[in-house]
Image (tube, rainbow, N blue to C red; front, side):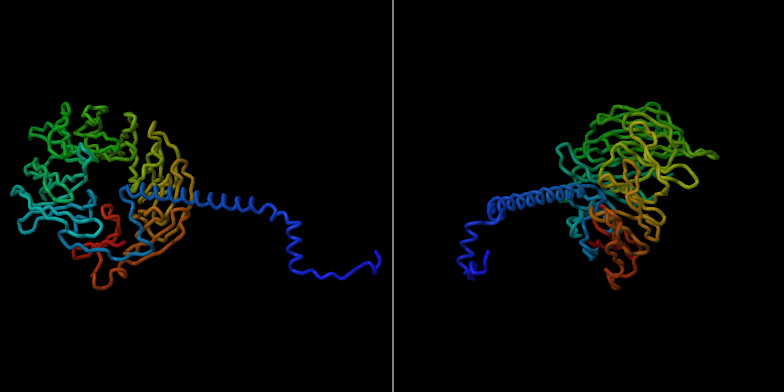
Length: 470
């Protein structure tokens, strides 16, 4: 091409616009498709976030119903309310319809009282009459009646040596937790054993002849639903009273002398076994229980009752899992009987060992299939099904008080500090010395712990008062 054939051309803005119109780039050519793709992706992200939020909300609601899981302290601890003696004792118990219930005896006047678990407000006080031989202690537990209404069963009994208990008496009330109205009230012998489950009120009592009877009572009316008379049970041995245990599956374990029965919801014995005299029973989890006896000069003897009504000879120590959301329901946990105890997971079907871990458990909880264990110096997160270690965290002190709010583990670091560690990897979070949170005006603190009924951290003062922090 010759230089003479070339011409200078000035490209004006309109020319550029025309050129774009005539020959659009590929992205612009498919601009509507691209825009639609962005809308689809954005919509998918919103839908995914919505489902994720729904799952998170469902998990939070599920965990809120698990006894022992705390409400989230939101990154710190602040005083919420304080109860003074004798009202403060309600902080030990479980809430019924959002109310903590208890009783007290002051200058001979006895009352039951209810405290709002969230605000600490005393909602009601109900005077009650008890036999003159009672120097009282009292406790209350929630129960549902046949219509599903939540009530509370309260009892008061003598503060007396064990030998005098059988000569004394105790009082049982069924109470509407929000109003304090007493629905039923009756007196029983002081050696009567009382068990309150989620929907049963069960008593084991004797007429004084040594023959025991187990009865399930309607919580609202006190009428007998069923009764069971243990054949030949005369309470031989050193134990003063029979034992009643909730196995967690709607059944009741009853042990008298050298015998144990598991009673169905209708009172029929589905397990009937002889045991060593003075066997002491403890509920494990998933409908299992373990009984141990300690013959003089011999190794402990034990028997484990599994959900399938089978029994396994086993003298290992029970591991108390709390809180427990019910995940990994096919496992129970014990401490092996060795010089250096180890954590043992066993099948609830056969009692066989599933896995072992060389950890001496001081406290433990189970959430979302992960078993969190507190030891003499560490927190260990274990896959409950396989025993595989998820993470370990050296915290530098014994971990014997631990719970969760569903996001973090909360641990008491002696003497009065509460520290948090992430559930997923154990990384440290915030830590608060409760003495600083309460300030010097609160006075000396006796202990710090966790209260299932309030779902908060609680601090007990040496003067008998208790403060909830959240």
